[in-house]
Amino acid sequence: MIRKFILLICFSSCLFSFAYNGKSVPGYLGSKNAASIKIQPNFALSENLLRQLIRPSLGLTYERVINRRSSFTIGFGSSKNSIGDSAYYPFEERGNYLILDNSVYPSSYYGYINYNNTYLSISKSYYNLLSGSIAPMGFYTKIGYTLNLQKITEDNLSYKIGPNPNGNSQYKTQYTSSFNLEFGSKRFINKNIFIQKSIAFNLPFNFWSTSNYHNYNNIEDYNETNLNFYLSKARTLNFSIGVGAAF
Image 1 (cartoon, rainbow, N blue to C red):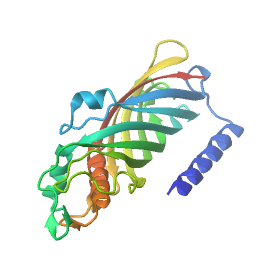
Image 2: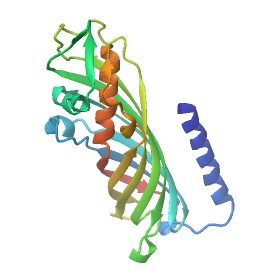
Image 3: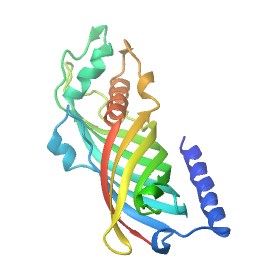
C-alpha cells in the first residue's frame, strides 16, 4: 500500500513538471505554488470533546497550480489521540465479541486506548471561476484519496481478566484509506498569506466491510479492528482550518 502511494506521488510530480514545461496560465497574482499548515479537530460525539479539541491532527500541504481553475495537492500529517470505553458499544452492537477461554471477556470495558495516526493524501482541486476564484485563491471543490496508518501505542483498558496480558508489544500498524470530497475556500489577507477553511466528506473503503457477528479470540485483533471501525466512522465528516503562503 505504501509503495503504491509513493508511486502515485512520483506520478503526480511528473504531471506537475509536465504542466509547467509547456505553456500555462499563471495562478492568482502569478502564484503557482501554495504551502499551508492544516489543523483538523478529531470530532466524535461519543468521545470526550475537550480531549479531541486539544489533540487535533496537524498536517502540511503542498499545492501546485496547473492552470487558472485547477491544481494538484499532496499532504501529510499526524496525530496522537485516544478512544474510551464508550467507543466499543457500537462495535458490540454489530455482534462482535471478544471471547477468551470459552467465555465472553470482558462483560464491560473501562479505560482508554492511545493511538498514533499518520496520513498521506493526494488530490485535485477545481476552482469556481464564476465566483471570481483563480487557483489557488477562492472557492474550490477537491477530489482525492487518503491513506491512514494507525497504531495502538498504549492499552489502558481494564478487562475482566485484568490488564492486557500481552501488554502493548503485540499491536501492529494498521492501514485504512478513503475517497475524499472536499469543499473549501482560501481567503488572502495580503498578496501571499491566506486563511483556508474546508469541510470534507470521506468514504472509507473498509467501513462497510467491517465484520458483523464475529468472535475474536485475540485481544489485539479485537482492539485493532474496533479502532479501524471507529476511525473510519469518525472521519466520514471532517472540518479543518489552515494558514499558508502562495508563491
